[in-house]
Amino acid sequence: MGFSSVAEFDEAYASVQNVFAKGTTTSKRWRRQQLKRAWWMIEDNKDRISSALYTDLHRHRQESFLSDIAMVQADILRTLEKLDEWTGDEKPTRRDLFNFFGGTVIRKEPKGIALIIGAWNFPILLLLQPMVAAIAAGCTMILKPSDMAPATQDLLLDIIPQYLDRDAIRCISAGPQEMQYILERRYGHIFYTGSASVGKIVHAAAAKHLTPTTLELGGLVPAIVTATADIELSAKHVAATKFTNAGQICLNVNHVLVDPSVKEAFITSLIKHFATFMGSKPQAEHYTHIINIRNFDRLDTLLKQTKGQIVYGGSRNRETLFFAPTIVTNLDADDALLQTELFGPILPILESTLDQAITFTRQTETPLAIYAFMQSTSEKERILTETQSGGVTFNDCTLHVIAKDAPFGGSGGSGHGYYHGPYGIREFSDLRTVTNALPAWMEGVMAARYPPYSDVKLGKLVPVVKPGFDREGNDVSNGGWKRWIVGLGVLGEAWYLGCLCCDLRGWTSSC
Ligand code: NAD
Image (cartoon, rainbow, N blue to C red; front, top):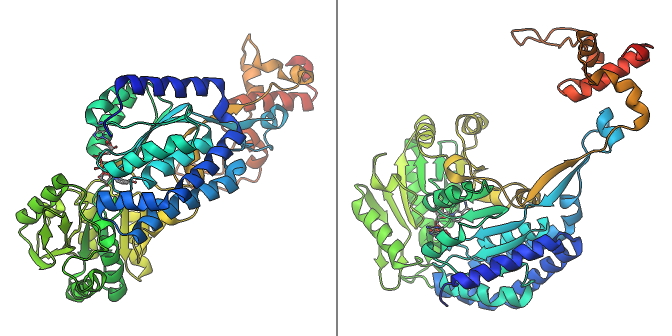
């Protein structure tokens, strides 16, 4: 299928714009219905999804069912279950008099038209999971699957209009050139998954309209293995993660930083597990291939450039795009394999103490995740306090991404914004604080707020506050300050409280 024409895109944009203006998508009924239909869309097309993923990636059904199918369906069911709670109004503290009398609520309102741009490595999951959040938030949307997974893209273009509201949810196809035009339009939110280089293009285009973005990017995710780790299990988890989707996962282990004292044992165990996972055939049928020749050549070049030693794998076939899991060791920190995100089945192993591993990790762009294999509590604490990353899994890989109702996203160079569970809905929602005036009968105690101003009025509006800390930040005992702190930090509240104090002391008439 070719790319959508300008006229087709314009018609899609006008349609989702009109529907949003009518308010159709804000109804809970519409949201529930679309979520349920999305669940059935996946259910009815499981086999087609799985075979499209096989065509695009030579991926085994087991991997596809777990990720692109089961994860999206589970997400839909959880969202349906929690929809009212996650989209409901929040009530800030009622111990505040303005909130109490004003009935203050924080509404979650849909941002408008969402543009969702997916990546090719999990082309269903990475498009439909943000879509679930956007539907739940009440947005209309334009979905843009990755053109690098064409079989899956064509399937999505076929089934989305069959199941979902065609006026409110449009799926279009576009390459980099078409995207220039698409990104010129104004959206309520842009949700992008992909590389940092294209993420910068998307972010710059969004900035022209001050459109908020979620950028789900990649990076150099390290596995840090110390001498206190369970070496056998650590190697098994790293090998299994690198095997999955042939390493073409944003959250995959990019490289291993392993303590010198356990390096040999770790590599021996890695080789054993890779061999088990690959099976006896030279090119395992259940192993995913590289997405296309461009990426195959990129990986091939990197492997030719390395000054390290290949101790396992290395076999590859440009015609079938098979690229074996490949362990490279005895390399330096400035090796070609450690400069960019590999996004493939090559696994460089760098000998590093924990100090060196932390220093190395701090020198790269903030990674999407860190996998730290260690039993020592103090070592774990060092990982948390001395590094930054989107998420952390200790003694396994990628588990934090499936933590129920927990946020998933990057930090710094690996992106910004979060989704999964309530966090995705938050991303596509504006928070709108709504409150009411104080009752008219309180007007008498509010006189100090009105001009003409005076120091007397100011003194009534801003009560004396004696904090429980001194200028050096030391806590000081001050039994009396707490009764003054009720309205601290909220000037508006302070003037009300000042008036109220006056009133309570019988000074109302002079306010
Ligand atoms: P990519 O940046 O090439 O493409 C992503 C999307 O952007 C695709 O839909 C593509 O069609 C579109 N695109 C390409 N060029 C564009 C342009 N000039 N203007 C606008 N849009 C354009 O990324 P990819 O190769 O599909 O994915 C690989 C990268 O994505 C890796 O870096 C990986 O780490 C990252 N990734 C991150 C996550 C995450 O959740 N954080 C998930 C998957 C992949």
